[in-house]
Image 1 (cartoon, helix red, strand yellow):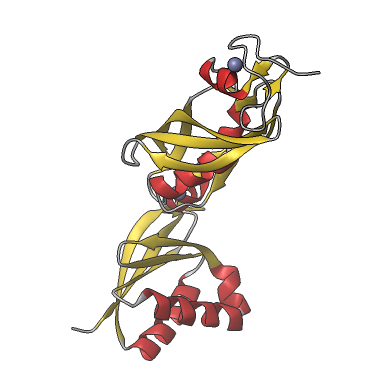
Image 2: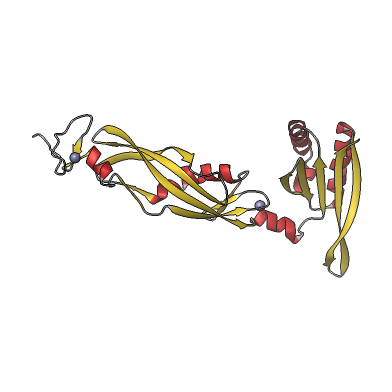
Length: 238
Ligand SMILES: [Zn+2]
Ligand SMILES: [Zn+2]
């Protein structure tokens, strides 16, 4: 039995298949190839470290562009429903309609098949980021650490190598580490105690020829005792 499109009357063909009485071109023209449930999406982003909250989880990213990639491939498909006769619908690629920022428009190209014929279809999404603070950065703010080691001006690959070696080789050091946060031109390492931060600072200073500077700041009291938070800075000698 030959199939014809009820809208345009054309006959079913491999180029323009007719499924359920409607050809591919008419499905697209009528906006029935897919349904978008929501095209304005909002996410919390940590303005300190750039991680983004997807569902209940905070995911590491290094800013808007990386966050948007994550959202386009993992989140956007949840809001798009394939139309009648559409199979294998997925995100093929996307492009920016505006620069990546607090409010970003992206054009997402969906690919799928209709009666065996492959098609792509673009959909515009607007993604809003809400400036926020992730639990990790809140923890750092709340002062659940006793020492911070700030390393600046060291080649990041060299620094990463040496840090991973130090932490691999020293279990105590690993246990005393609260967090590592990338900063401009360097990294901040947060520790539960002064000793660990000092130990690592001395080792790095020796290996990399860095200058150590220590400062204390009062960080409230705990069980009646004044707490002083140690801040150590490591920089190349001038
Ligand atoms: Zn048609
Ligand atoms: Zn954060």
